[in-house]
Amino acid sequence: MSEAYQVKLEAFEGPLDLLLHLINKYEIDINDIPVAQITEQYMQYIHTMQKLDLNIASEYLVMAATLVAIKSQMLLPKQEIDEELDDYVEDPREELMQRLIEYRKYKDAAEKLKEKEDDSSQLFTRSPIVFRELKQSPTKVVQGDLTIYDMLGALGKMMERKKWKEPLETKVQRAEIPIEQRMEEVIELVRKRQNGIYFDELFTYQSRTHIVVTFMAVLELMKSRKVFCEQERHFDALLVHYMEE
Image 1 (spheres, one colour):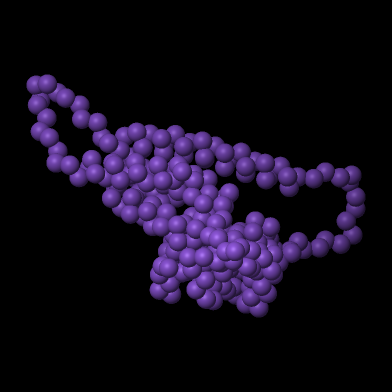
Image 2 (cartoon, helix red, strand yellow):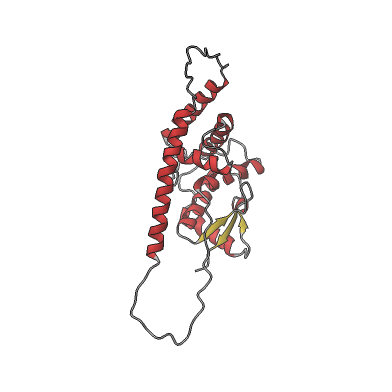
């Protein structure tokens, strides 16, 4: 008995987080959002999630409807304002922009608190001793600042480059590929490449199960600090590296 393969990823923080990611990626002024562009990019992410049968939270779809509504309002012909009445015409983007600005404040504050927590976790005390030999500490590998949305965007572009269009598979067997097994396979592939392996190379054939499980395996390996991804510039290909102990 086969049924649709569905996965829910907790790494997605919400539609405002995705919008902020797009604003930062495309260097958009948060006080003057080009609604048509941001709506198009937002919908591309939603379509990628839907292709993979990811369980999209309802708030993502609500935000998609909101963006489309704002876009429609922006396309309406502007009415002439009677200067004597001095009517104020509210920008249809105003509420969304204020929500984003407020969200960014809290997000920035949370990141600063997280940095302080990480710094404090690296502080240790011990009784004074005499060091007879000074050993050079190993170089620390710093993981890039890629987000879940960078990874999802790379996945969508990979399917476009390989021309993997719908339908992939409408029905697949559940748990056809154990994620633990795929994690081991990804680790082996990454270890063999001293300079890293391109993200696209991890996806070898057109199967929804294979794509979803491979994507989740990479996220789990990043979370457990066994691999890390880097991208020199926005829109460049992602490289997956093995993280030395």
